[in-house]
Image 1 (cartoon, rainbow, N blue to C red):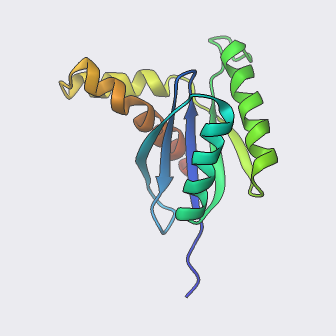
Image 2 (cartoon, rainbow, N blue to C red):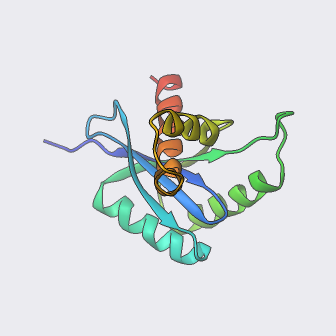
Image 3 (spheres, rainbow, N blue to C red):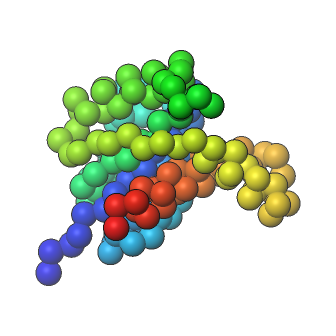
Length: 140
């Protein structure tokens, strides 16, 4: 039986990249990990390892639009990172509107009464799972 390829989602920040992945059937999004962004090349190497380990067939990268639905400085950084990733991997990479996913993740973690330190450790991968859930919902 051929294993279905998974979809990986990335919430790319200046210091960290939140990572989420679909289950083996491709139905649900699950937070996976946070990659420390100590440079694009190092982060891309980590992502390549994940792609191989989990049989990833597509990557969805959250694109943070401004409040006026424009491409701002952060979105430009994310697009540059996406271009570097595309030249390093031979799988489809798409961008997806991630507006407010980090804020949503933070709100949920505050309501769960997690400490500030714990929230900082996990909010990026939760935000990545929100990006992936949104993508899956729209593409079913």
